[in-house]
Amino acid sequence: MEALVKSLWVGVGAFVGANLRFWFGEWMGQRGGMVFPWATFAINVIGSLLIGIFFAWELKQNPNFAYRLFIAVGLCGGFTTFSAFSWESLRLIDRGEWGSLVLYVSGSVILTIAACAVGFGATRSLLGG
Image (cartoon, rainbow, N blue to C red; front, side, top):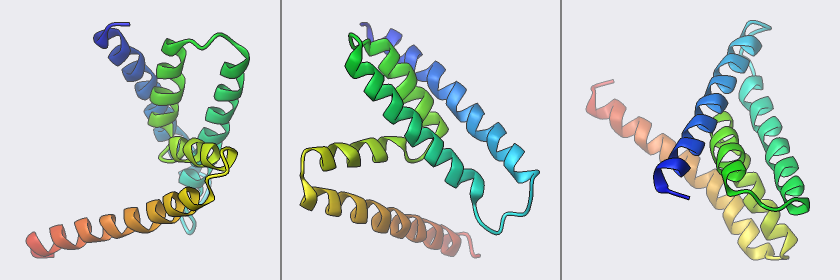
């Protein structure tokens, strides 16, 4: 499959997924206050469910790389911030790689929050905020 065709599969899936995330978030936001980030929470759970369903289905079918690019990489990647992380964690569990799982999960959560805090704080300081 050509690189441009691969990019189109990913791009179209990401377009659909990102718009679904946006409109689902808008819909959830109209249902109540944002005391808890329910929209992101629900999106990540739904997207993780979807990627699990997709890969289980793909195991029973002849793998189709275009479907994988559209659904797993594009759609789920554009819809969630969590689906690939969930799938990769599940694969580590399935292989019994417990040390790698703990490092991956804890490191991902701690370091991404820390990186966000550093980026936010540094930019705020630079901009005089």
